[in-house]
Every structure is written in C-alpha cells, then in structure tokens.
Image (cartoon, rainbow, N blue to C red):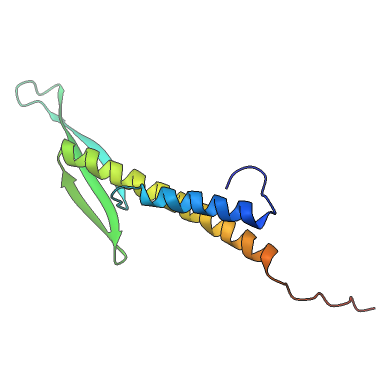
Length: 119
C-alpha cells in the first residue's frame, strides 16, 4: 500500500481485495536471474584480435541451498524473464497484503492495556 494509510476498516478491506484480485492475474512465476553472457576469445584467423561468441543466456537460482545454473535459448530466456518478473510482482503484492493485514488487525482488535509507569 502506498501513500497515506487509511484507518477505515472497510477501505482497508477493499484495498486488500484489490491486491488479492491482482494475484490472480499473474502468470507463471519463477525465482532467479537471467544473465546474458558473451565470450571473448582470440580469433582463429587473426590472432591479434578478439572474437565474440554468443550471446548465451543462463538462468541461475537456488535449490535446496545450492546454486543451480541452466543454459537457455533466447526464446526461453524471454519466457523465463517474464516468469521472474511475475515472481517479483508476487513478492511486492504479498508485502503490501501483509502490511494491510497487520494494519487492519491492529485497528480492529483490542490491544493489551498498557501498564502504569513505575515511580
């Protein structure tokens, strides 16, 4: 939720429902990063110059605490990048929903009474 927080429970519920509706519109999701690599090697015909090979695309992510890297085609890289972008949107939506939930619960439930300060 951006901007000023509302203290109206009904407005908070509506905001939460709008965020929940956006969750259903997300496509596929994937964690990780796509990296484009270009390899520079000596040109076999002209030893004094470098030749670029690539681009090559790699998808890297964590699985059970280990880094996994997979080589991708350009078409796969675009599809996986859309899924990674979807995952980042999902994280953002969930963060906003958590903040709204916390705020809603704080204003709609009674809190613990504060103690009188000691003298």
